[in-house]
Image 1: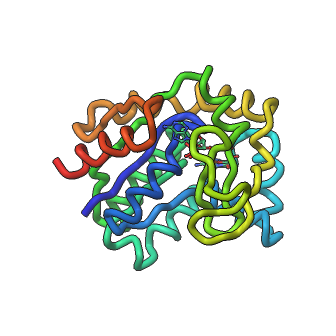
Image 2 (image 1 turned 60 degrees about the vertical axis):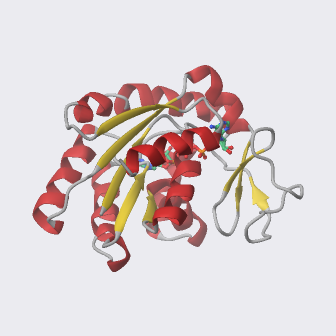
Length: 216
Ligand code: ADP
Ligand code: AMP
């Protein structure tokens, strides 16, 4: 069983790589960002609460996110393995994850993969990002354009730009990453399951590296 945590700044390629792994290894991708964006779309109480933080590039409070992940990991489709994309993002979240894996689920993480991309590349990646409004597939206007302008290759739906992918919010999100999330690399570095990967290479090359780690 493969249970992965993806670390890396916003725009590192976590979603792009998770999608590839999900299909080839038949395990589920759990993106806390996607869960929150769906909640915003449906106008639920969670969505109303989360939107305030997301629009400002801030983290949603730990107790809210931990509750979401705890419930999600208990669903049946996680039994074959999972990829956590965008969680944990704080030490408190990482500790809560350790606790739920050990005490509620009796399973362990198998790989913690940190995608390394310097800040200078992030702005261009995120301002050019487009995502499918239906299936969530990620594109880039320059680096990974859809075959037909603005249409998802996979499901044919329209592509949209995320509200938080504007320059001002991207800079705030990067700051939050360096202040609160980057330290998780140290948290996991002695686990014996921690891998750093150069995320600046072509997505296919990045994927080959990840695959070699997962199949080793
Ligand atoms: P994250 O999930 O880490 O926020 P994404 O996977 O959404 O990042 O990628 C951010 C943007 O960068 C997307 O537009 C994506 O198409 C593009 N991208 C992802 N990986 C690469 C790469 N290796 N090289 C160039 N662009 C990439
Ligand atoms: P992402 O799609 O991972 O880039 O996340 C988008 C936004 O959702 C972030 O900027 C946060 O506001 C919120 N978010 C996603 N995951 C978390 C998390 N683990 N902890 C706190 N906030 C989160």
